[in-house]
Length: 452
Ligand code: HEM
Image 1: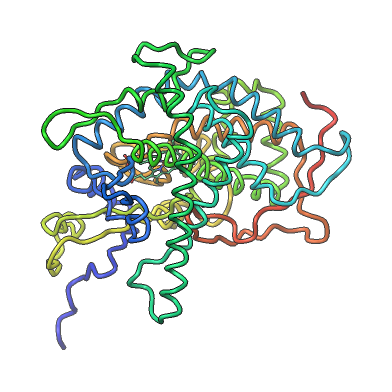
Image 2: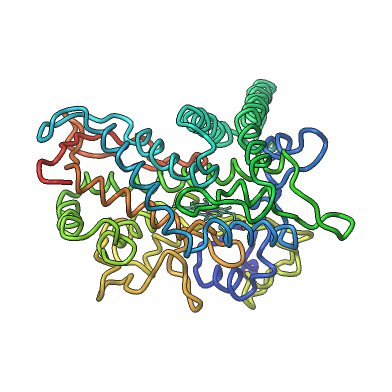
């Protein structure tokens, strides 16, 4: 009998958390670049002749470091998250009003819960980005174009996946749609960027009312390394792409997670009741620390449905042996692309008991997820919804605070039940730009009589 062939890396998909740890944590430098963007996205980002990078796409190096330090130090640093509270309060008031046109105590059907959540989360992220420089109508217009952008990108296929002339034609039309959206993004973002430039010439510019410094202001002041070894300001197209990234990444991911969490609460009324008990007894302003069950519910939604289920890396051929971990593998001819599967790791039955069961208790003392947080610790990976290594998500702190705040208010203000006539929730997943519900959540909500 012939010896078995050596393990092949042909799939380049990593589902083993030990291998992910060895690569992304122990050999982080070698696993810190992303594959190039899909052709359409790259073309849309290159219009005007120059390549326009955002933080997610830029190669690991000084340019990336400058963008990342700016975002984390100026906008997303934990010490700045307190400034979110007034924005959240305003957004929460709007969300509660939008969900409760009927009098307290009466039930109403809410279709497209997603749209309501998107509006609320987007308003917080947009204010963090632009400060008070944009009015409500402008925020609404931005929201529509960012949503269109995400839908359009989610539909795009790599050219290699296309076959017939007809398929190519369809893709070409998608590409044109992406270009049109890019033009619209510029129309919407450049005026407020210009306004911030004119109104605030120095880094010591006044902050917004409650001391927040909008992300746009930090981008206006930022100097990144240039090709001649000096430093330069960001061009308009770069600013537009960084802002689109901030708004899109900051909203779509959190909304997808909130929708999944609510869907499971509708599906499991006993979990919803337990969460409501904790939220009723607590201060919503203490969601950051004082509500362990709320924290557990959000973690459980992230474990089962990480909105970005696949974390891609571009790996040089000589680093492939890290993935093989001493096994005899055929070395690849050149660089390879590797997908680390946060989706599979979150449901690995060697780590999680009943992994397909929504059971927030697992994150409480004594559970199989005790001590596990949104980011992996240094020793092992048990889930990685925000990625890991140098490129882990810089928005993790803000996302957790926002999601917990919105979820706490939604269960304190409303009772959530399946839509009339179904009695169940369809929890099938759909891979689009983010991992979302195939059948978007609709629910019967009842405004509680005992609430704020
Ligand atoms: C539930 C919410 C969120 C989830 C699950 C999530 C998840 C992720 C993941 C998996 C990555 C890739 C990490 C890696 O490659 O190791 C990422 C990157 C990123 N995320 Fe998030 N994210 C969320 C919220 C946010 C927020 C609120 C922001 C900012 C406002 C944000 C901005 C970014 C950026 C800029 C990157 C690229 C970082 C880099 O390449 O250095 N994300 N996110």
